Image (cartoon, rainbow, N blue to C red; front, top):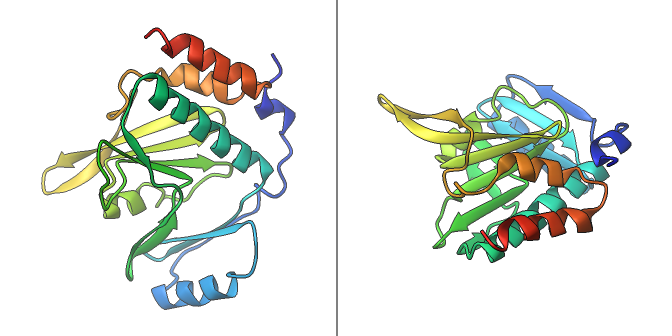
Length: 201
């Protein structure tokens, strides 16, 4: 089956990416104001590192499909969830960013249980640090058709992330199956495949 990943190999908008080191919080806020009226651009800041990235069609297609498939899984497996979306997460003077998708499970909390980023261009070395500062329990990165899962664990005096093969909050979710469904040419077939796999689970 033809895959979206190969069909949309040319992604000029999504590929627009800029990273700058040694940026102060004040400089970041000034730039943020300057970019406020420009669409399809996202700014992220973490401890002196500024990222500016274009948000294009391919990025939004993967985000939308990932949200739909997870929503279907929540329904079929009767998972109590609260979608917290792409809200701005911030620690004044240190970091400010938006995940592409985020969720709480069972009850609403100040910090999302799960944050997900769709990475079209290579992220900076701070891609996990910003979530560590916020103490987000679980983070996923979708990149080049693969999902990397990171779980926050205690390591001596401070918490750090370890990579995991399965989700902490969704341990029964088949990640490899999700990866395949995300890049199917037919989104309807992808949702049907999810229904077939989990409806009698």
